[in-house]
Length: 276
Ligand code: C2E
Ligand code: CA
Ligand code: CA
Ligand code: CA
Image 1 (cartoon, protein in one colour):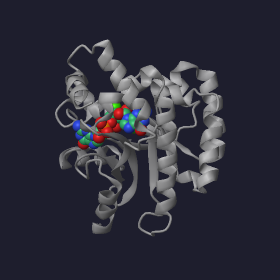
Image 2 (image 1 turned 120 degrees about the horizontal axis):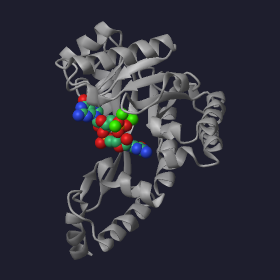
Image 3 (image 1 turned 135 degrees about the vertical axis):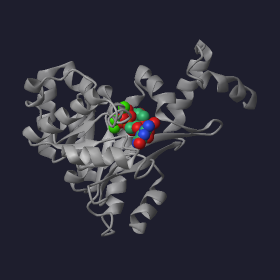
Image 4 (image 1 turned 90 degrees about the vertical axis):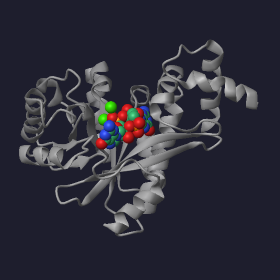
């Protein structure tokens, strides 16, 4: 088994063509990862303009017995391809609800909003709304503290069905954030039909925002759009104080990025809060 492990190792390198057997090995391991309890959620803090914690984004990690900590880029594509992203997504939902329930007990964590990433495959499951409702009921959490991060590609797939589904979800009380915003093709006409709570400005704009005037213009437009549609706006990938200041001046006052913290295991996340 050790030998096979070493063999498959190099096939995790995304630069290499994956052989069929390596792909099968990854798929098999991925299939067992839930029952073997190898997934973990990391938490990245989101703050307001006074650095007050607003909540966190839950980000998936795979603690692989041989390869160690694996980032989503190394296994989400395979999970998407095989449909395993659906059971993994249910695991994320349940784990997030469990965490929200635990946070209820401490005044420091009680009001934190937890955002989870939802894949297109999961969102389009016929029982998605029921599953979200069931999780909220089962764990007895305040649904307003659970936020679903959706991408434009999910929403553009089948506009009318998507709007119906989002409206049904809205009734369960959960919130929506539109992830990676600014990289897709959503029109204003379309956006205003969706019951979104927040736009999340894609991190690709952050690198150049302080030097490239067209990136700055796009970001300013996104912020103005959110405001005109009565939505919140959060910037992700904020790494420098200069970026934060610039965003603040343009009217964005919610932030996430390495400037505040990397995604960390829950114990570390809670320590971060206690340090204030
Ligand atoms: P995303 O949803 O856009 O998540 C943000 C990514 O940016 C995370 O990468 C995060 O660690 C990283 N990041 C945060 N702050 C900074 C920063 O200041 N600078 C830079 N350069 N990067 C920053 P991560 O954790 O590797 O996740 C990558 C992607 O994998 C996510 O992108 C999301 O699309 C997907 N993903 C993660 N967790 C889940 C999940 O539970 N379910 C699904 N379906 N997808 C997930
Ligand atoms: Ca996200
Ligand atoms: Ca994002
Ligand atoms: Ca992204």
